[in-house]
Image (cartoon, rainbow, N blue to C red; front, side):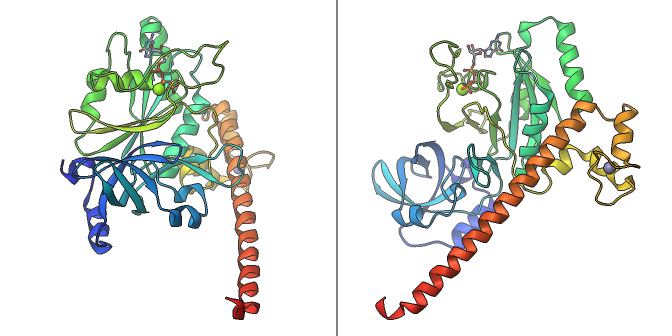
Length: 354
Ligand SMILES: Nc1nc2c(ncn2[C@@H]2O[C@H](COP(=O)(O)OP(=O)(O)OP(=O)(O)O)[C@@H](O)[C@H]2O)c(=O)[nH]1
Ligand SMILES: [Mg+2]
Ligand SMILES: [Zn+2]
């Protein structure tokens, strides 16, 4: 297998050449399961672990390899390798780690395009769609919306769903599909390009793994219903994996996500809620919060029905979350800095003992 077929673009090749070290070769992380990885190089696949040094010097979860990452590995034997370092990421899809105020969880790295899958059943939520979009824009990954399970309802109702999405979310391709009837499959397949990496995002049970299995004509990922009584909250897919499609594209499957906290990165909200940001230039006060101020152009547009009220409310909620994340991570950085100084002073005063 050629590295380029695994997505080793010019940027990675340049970095690889400039930082080449004897005994290390480039490989791509194709699966991750509780800090056990599978990496794929030009010669083959290996089980892999990170070096102790990498683990101890990691400051956050972002410093660990993720599916899609390019890494420098040293091959130990026919099926085992050690991951020594991570190449700079071209893109990284991440969400706020659950239970953390200021840390991220990396979902996938070096993804070109994300398929946001949402089913036209009780999973359907425009607010959540805006949340996924924000995560994609924060990550600089192009989003495409896939509305799944359209076999469940008649054409009229499906058209209504699609209208709702298109009314609220502009300038993004929306594809309707069914894994039962294969309607929409052709369109999805036609979007997948050789050497590019795609990632499936969406709640549990929307049909991500079913789509992936059908696209590669094999039962690669387990699929199924989640039993409400015995398996409450458990996802069918429990790990992340990158699959090579016959067409040469690469597709990453993910376990469905229940919590979808956004971080503090620029651009996420700005692009998702472009209209609100554009209008805010006309607010009377420069620091308008668009909640109580007189002369607020955003609230006026909501009033006139030019911006959907629920979209506006979703924006306010996510903006608050973003600010909260920003202040928590600023606080964490401040504390880390103080701790760093304390350690430095300690080392200085105890220099002779080292
Ligand atoms: N009616 C209908 N059912 C579908 C369709 N696609 C998938 N399903 C069913 O939905 C259930 C969940 O599908 P999965 O592919 O396992 O869902 P998933 O998104 O991978 O779920 P997690 O792995 O838990 O995140 C399965 O029982 C599928 O058979 C579809 O297009 N129409
Ligand atoms: Mg799955
Ligand atoms: Zn305003």
